[in-house]
Length: 282
Image: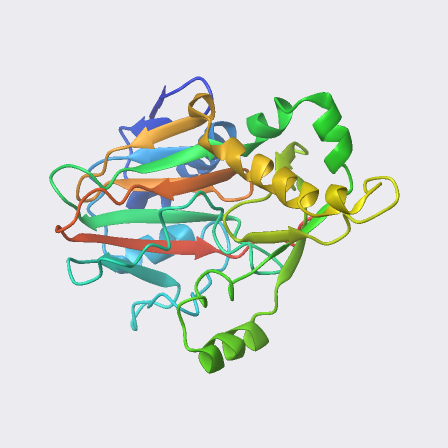
């Protein structure tokens, strides 16, 4: 297996390897996992995998989870079908910087995403290194957000366009999750800036230490949250991947955010994703 780093900040392409072989080769899987932890997202071309092999490889990282809104393959639980077509011009849940499913109390560890069909040009995906985003924050911002916590909502994202009854039922099933604004990576011990497109507000901002007047709390808290979320948009923290059929991306959802660029209508784009169940944040 060869590892080619793609940017100084994040991302590497793996060549000379088939993911299907790693299902039965623990040493090969260990090499892939080590590359993932080091580079945060790894990419492979020409991975002609069956859905069963896709699921079996992803399960080497841990158990898989279904998505309550996006449809899963009925024969392969945990394999979410992200199919876009010209009849869905307003389907815009991916083109925002986000970590997957942070509205869960235990967001995914990571994901294995395979391209089934893509436009001849356009439809790239971008990833950002949120460890680097935290490291490069000004010290006074780091001090200000130390100990802060924030809410993440499926209701305010996937549920927003639903009729109110369905939206409230979704929130009842998946209440807003609360996570630290600065998460500690459970394997590396790194500090991660952990707010994204699913984050709605801080939950413990309004204290005497932070709020002198009403303006410090509102709009002060909102302006700070927007500033933190915007860090993912800095190009120096990013890598951009151009898809081809049977290309695969594997990413660490705990230390990255991603953005699916929707610049390809009226083309089709079919992706299949296996999300790995993660740990409670701390």
